[in-house]
Image 1 (cartoon, rainbow, N blue to C red):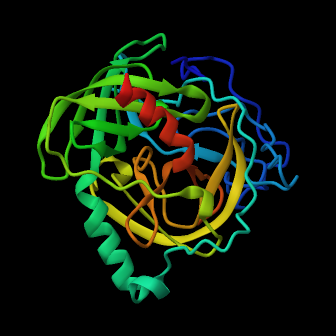
Image 2 (image 1 turned 30 degrees about the vertical axis):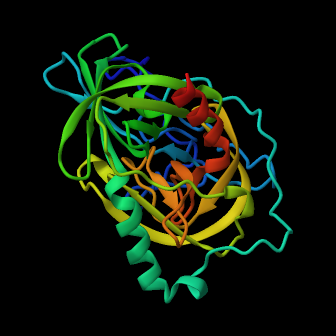
Length: 313
């Protein structure tokens, strides 16, 4: 990790060109706010990147892992940026036009019951992942991070985001039942911001993997994770807002993502996005920093090859 801004730099950043008159409130969260992770400030006056598929402004996009770096300058705290090379390789997939039946609230009961049942089905397989590492900044010091993950095999195989575990020297996995285990990274896919972590345990609850190729906008979407790194097992719900989205985070691009309005907050990274039957349809990875109800998940069909490769190796 490298420092983007030095708090001891004697050269102060230039004032915004349209600074308000005295007595007029200034809201820094304007459309010109630079794109950045939730962790790292970016240079002033940088323009937000446009959504490459539509040409419209999407605004800042934040990765959703939580981290704090305790530096050597008297306990000052900063936030850890996501790392890893996320290049645009996948081709955005068009919404399926087949007549394949999809699970909706109409087929599993009313919406609230569907959400409750999905959370009960997949919740035991959702984990909290805590990491420690070393800051790359000039002050050094320990870095602690928190994200989420989901157990996909009963012998301790867990899917999460690469940016959750990138640079970690220790990984601690806390299960829904409160047990903790040391974790080991077994596989990564930096292009798609994915990682597989293994813990030494058996007989664990697992989540069922769904089929993201058959998703339709408007379907129920449910996220489970550890927002802010302290509210483990939090359930939020919404819908699949769109498919095949492309975003840029920390100057790196992710493609073919699921967009959802289910609340995805810092700490949710690596947790599952579920359908109404409690099946995993995506891995939560980012949110918009300048709008509400715009989150993104990696489709589970993108994740499956990495799972098969890791478990089969």
